[in-house]
Image (cartoon, rainbow, N blue to C red; front, side, top):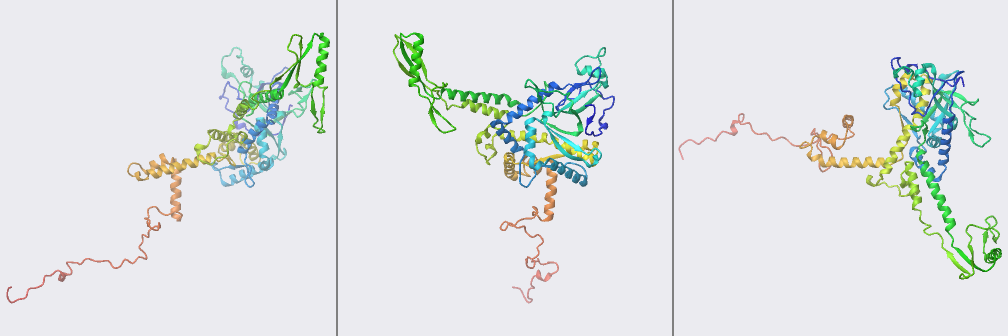
Amino acid sequence: MAQLFGFSIDDSYKKPSPSVVSPVPKNNEDGADYYLASGFYGQYLDVEGVFKTEYDLIRRYREMALHPEVDSAIEDILCEAIVADQNDSPIQIDLENLNVGPNIKDLIRGEFQYIKEMLDFDKKAHEIFRNWYVDGRIYYHKVIDLEKPEEGIKELRYIDALKIKYVREQKKKGGANAIQYVQGNKPGGNDNPLDADFEGLSEYFIYTPHSYQKNQYGSVAVTGQQKDAVKFAKDAVAYCTSGLVDRNKGTTLSYLHKAIKSLNQLRMIEDSLVIYRLSRAPERRIFYIDVGNLPKIKAEQYLRDVMMRYRNKLVYDANTGEIRDDKKYMAMLEDFWLPRREGGRGTEISTLPGGQNLGEITDIEYFKKKLYRSLNVPPSRMDGEGGFNLGRSSEILRDELKFTKFVGRLRKRFSNMFNDMLKTQLILKNIITPEDWDRMSEHIQYDFLYDNHFSELKDAELMNERLALAQVAEPYVGKYYSQDYVRRKILRQTDEEIIEQDRLIEKEIADGTIPDPSIPVDPETGQPLDQSGAGMDLGAPVMEPDLEKDSSATKAPEMPQGGEI
């Protein structure tokens, strides 16, 4: 394992300045194990203990997934997270917030589609997501042409999580102080924690294809020093974990981990219930046989003779369908035969009643609901309880909303796998540089096909209530409230939404899509009135007479001459 297999992307730009120091080593949130490699005759790496721990955990997770109740809960999660549609892909890349040119966006979309085709994700999305959810981790080897790396990834090969381990190794290259600080020892004679140096870190994967074999004692032998072990470069393997880490041991966990105890309890309760019902279901008889003064040996012989004489044992043969009398076998459901000496009440037969309340399974239902809660699945989904309701949001259980948010977190975490593959593909094809990816990765989102309608119903009802409240407040706009207040406080529109909606409204008014609200509307027809006056014959306007011009109209009539009246 001296040489690393695969390829590495040059990330020398990430190396911090010599003045940027920290006494704290890198965290293990990615599931990597931190080791100190040293030795008199070379370096060695012992991962046997951690390998065996993870090996046992993953095997237990896979056994749990085969249990009917756990499998039903996992299927509920998968059906929400991965929506299989005949026409649409389960996942699409979203580059709306990415501030690059349209040509770069088209190249990124094309490479993402290429990655999905290599994974055959549209057909195998359910299986891939299930493997990641059950194991708590997933690995893919990014196969490239080492002579022509600019051609990108040629193949993505799935690696069993039982055969690979992510390792972060601290070498002695950085000095003894770093080693001593990691081990928890104070450097000799030096109290300055900034003297710790972690530049000697080496990150890689150990792949052991044949390391898990049973020895002569029947147990599994696990070791990291097998001859066929291969060290993979970090960039040569696509790696995605569940994000759950045991803080005490540093081991990556699956989402099934907290259901281990609940499942074991359910199994024990079910097994004990079966045993109790089989042993107490029938009514059994107690025969008290009077043996008089017979000696012990003859009394026992007499008891056996009476028992064989009156014993009735019919056996049903499931293979042949026959019923036969089989008296030579003693079963646990047989009657009891007890001897009684002289002075007793003679031969007596009494009945031992069977088990009571055999139909009571309240404890079974309790542990089943506890198992579902430990898997973050609403107990209402158990056995199809409660049908799908498309009513008001008040009728929607809070557990369903929590479940929707849980599935959203799973999708967010699972999309890191696509980020890793897409980064490698874009850098190898010289579409972007590693520095560009660090700036762009935060703005690359992944849209999963959505099928849960509970959140949609909640949003629709909230919008309906807000619009109704805005309608009630409309007469008071301009008197007690401003239009801006209604939009911000009642409709809950942000500054960006207000600007965007105003722009769209002006555009649609100009296009004639919606009428101009400033134009009056005919109350009878509902159509906007024509403000130009074209086509309307209102007649000639009535003009008032000009008193100054037309003096004849206002001049008083002259009196006739010739006398007075």
